[in-house]
Image 1 (cartoon, rainbow, N blue to C red):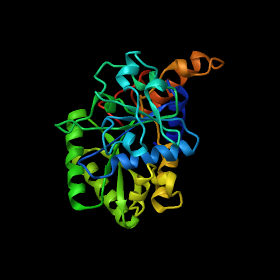
Image 2 (cartoon, rainbow, N blue to C red):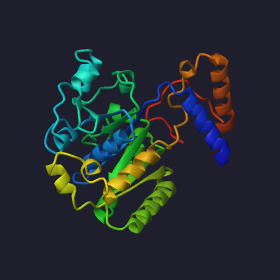
Image 3 (cartoon, rainbow, N blue to C red):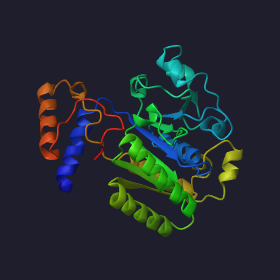
Length: 302
């Protein structure tokens, strides 16, 4: 498909989207790789762009979680909101940068409401936890994108590739993204990204898309002491600049085929005929049905 046709198709997906809210899940294959630090910094960067951001934390509220990083205490959980015991704004805690933080533990079981149905902001980021078998929760499976956070050393690269294989066979993933954290030299991060993408394509038939890199930050401990992210406390630092760049690029990531397609999202002045025509166009260009509902991550992703 040519770039022009691909851009047109992506534009139609956005037009037909059931909701403007994008949901992105972040996870890592092991402890200490900085996934929570990445998620909180990206959340702050998005909030400073004027986006309405909700961070769903599957880690709870203990030390090392998003709630602890900002020293905030959510009054409830995602389950409380889904069961209408609390409103989302009543359950979530607001970080100083404006990000809403809500605990997603116990993790939302299959069949629970989509978080998009509970909140109408711009972006939902999930700080996801893999279970004992290295699989995603139902909440993370329903995200529009999965981003794996890794570091540019042999142990992390090996663990990430092994984790990608598990996720691929557990959820039939065809595409995911990965972000390299703690980078000393961007050139080395680019090489890691290239090698991993090549391995995924050659041996797993999985499209691995680089989401960028975040450079190592010597002031990370200082920001943590201040209960702020690096983006908030040290906006001129290289790591903060990297997070702002990634946040900018996230808004340009294509909508996945088949995700959030629903005719009711089309402006009333255009009518349902426009929605039908858009789906017919997508089906013609992509050679498959364009379903009018959101597909979970376990469905094939192109």
